[in-house]
Image 1 (cartoon, rainbow over the protein chains, first blue to last red):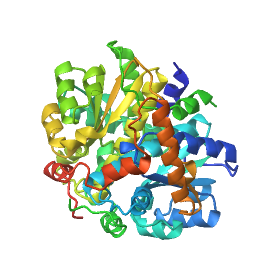
Image 2: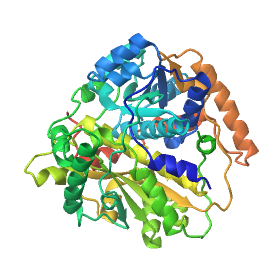
Image 3: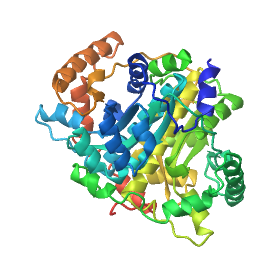
Image 4: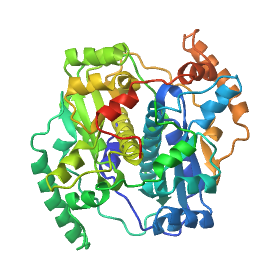
Length: 247
Length: 247
């Protein structure tokens, strides 16, 4: 039994200040290998990663993501790709038409597997002494990423990940009380609003303690994000890449 | 730097033969805590877990999943839930209407976060000396799971996970060559079909070595799964739970 890993998982935080030191090839290879060994739905293996080190390409991705400077500063940016091109190609050469990608189930299974890969990349990098920050902002304009990385039909970029050596360690942000996350035997709503109130207060205290006096309570922050469709280009992007949402 | 974790990640495999030994509460608590500390899109924390230990409920879930006996045999079954009920509730009490869940982006962000949670649960359990097998089969009939676990609107069950002590360790299944998973700077299709052929041969050898003489090559297996919509109930289930796919 390793307690190392559990401590690493418990210590999760996003880092946004990286040094100029490159990530050595053997370390990056090992991180990607760890992600590759993960499970996939029906062993479909419908995930790919694009490793971006080229500074000009990272600068473009930083812009696509809405101007996130750490994407340009961190030496490595990984793009996690939902990839039904691979099984499509395997079937196509046998003359078999793939249907799975063109369904809500296919989208869900592909994104879930991509989430597993993203999670494994993060913990592998963290256990290697590196810092990370996941970047969902590439979903602002998925087709720009498709074009930049030469992604084929039946794929789309679902999330990015900065990896690098940490210059200034971030503070760990508190989570909603675990009672709102864990339910035993069946879902329980009792106590949720009280937990939200407690978390709102805790997060404001956290922002003040870490020098972000303009930090918002959780409810206010989520109200800003979730009172609208957050990345509205996603629907047209996944459809234009050959996915279907009508069955 | 911990090499323990990287070794655990590299050793990933699904176990399907569990002993009757329960999973001790402190160990399960620690596994769930490790998942809870993970990141979420815009700190929305739109994931929940339902812990199912009750044998009768596990037997029902085994049936819903298409008759997977390990769901009934493993002492713990976790259901990972995409949960936009929590942020909805936080906004609703402020009189703000949540829009984010009712979009393709919301679905993708929620499922991606659920994948991160699922991945963290797996590595935390494995690092605690337990065996696991993820169970996507609950997506055969998501609304039956909704009913069984009392899941509210704006949530749906996306994947299950058996956890227990291993009776008979499984063999690790090989993966497609890592060249099909990792792309540098841009996506590359060169060499893919040759990699599929090599993997088809490798997987057949693996099945023969592990006593599954009727095991299929990868291409044949995927042709069976992906020449149709795999869990066709998913679209209606997510819509009936309040998600929207038309924007």
